[in-house]
Amino acid sequence: MNIDAKLKTQDLQKPLARFFDLATAKTEKLNKDWNPEKGSPVFTVRGKYSARGWTEWTQGFQFGIQILLFDATGNENLLALGKKNVDRYMAPHVSHIGVHDHGFNNVSTYGNLRRLALEGKSGDSDDAVKYYEMALKVSGAVQAARWSNISDGTGFIHSFNGPHSLFSDTIRSCRSLVVAHKLGHALMGEGDKRFSLLQRAIEHIRNTFKYNVYFGKGRDTWDVPGRVVHESIFNMADGQYRCASTQQGYSPFSTWTRGQAWVLTGAAEELEFFEAFGGKDHQDFKKELLKVATTTADFYIANTAKDGIPYWDTGAPGLANMPDHLKKNSQPDNPHEPVDSSAAAIAAQGLLRLGHYLGPKTAKGKKYWQAGLAVARTLFSDPYLSADKKHHGLILHSVYHRPNNWDYIPKGKKVPFGESSMWGDYHAMELALYLHRTITNEPYLTFFK
Image 1: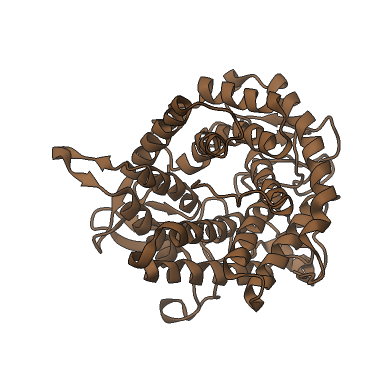
Image 2: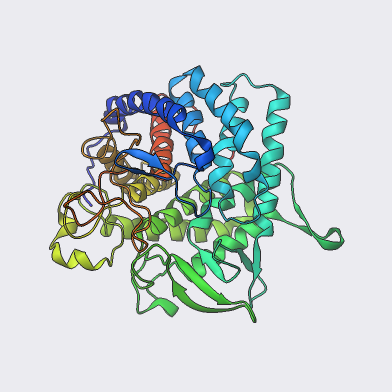
């Protein structure tokens, strides 16, 4: 991708204002149009959000957008909607033992409401804060209980595929564990055995890095630094690692770009958390986080189209019919392979946070910050900004599950494009708020206020 060294954060002020304006009307419309009895909105079909029964991992994003949009605009109606919906629909997510998605659903809702209360933005009482904190404590413990032990004595939070499955996505659910830990909580087991939520988060993150991220040396001499596999498979009879796998990518030997974005941004966010709270006890772990964040950031930059938007998988076979596709701007409407704007929305925040952590006076810090700005500039402009007021989505050209053929393909076309996803819209909103607060000199946006 092309990194514009002259691009300034302030240059995004007008595009962000337009995005917030469009998003306000669309968010209110979706809240009015959507029937919660259908489940959670997942992705759009012909511009209208639809559900997809798999797991209800996007409901927190729907309500989280309402809360974040209030943060950006001060629109009290959006805050009221967010609070009402969280109170009415989110409790089952707090105690949901069947998913790896607690960081998505609950930190995006209860976590954001707690942060706004502590910042004095929402007017919530101390009792409301205690309510949010109780939800976050329980969520962190429930997520930590979804645990698979492996042969080296450590373990990981297993995906909904089963106890054998370590997903790259789940690194962002470690947010729920570390927040609950900071609130003084722990997981209690048989015989009142106490399990540290912080320790389980660290073990999960380390095993994600050990098995799902490749570094081009040692075990990985045959591979490319920064490549990420979606899933690792373990033999649960003896806890041994067996092989790389994927659910939503093209193959275990290519990179599903949304999974890569989860790791990049998850590593950058956890790096900020451990910088704030880790002290001297976690210096080595911070080095691991920084190594993974920079290695995956470099891979993203090297394997993304000129304008900062990646195709859905770096090894997708149709890319062979698109010579020099990385030297050109992304092409959502093409006959070979779809782009994935949701991967870009997730990765942009990781690039910015990594750049901020390293500092603008360092060469790497400036590089990553400018790369994040470049991705954001593309996302909040044509052809990615969803300007059609009849379209439910905020950001266009997201894909959900290409191997399952779940994405809508327009008549006469060969690949999906023109649609939105709830996770893509949420992370675009989170990205927009991060930049907005930077521009307006508001407190730095973190999940661990």
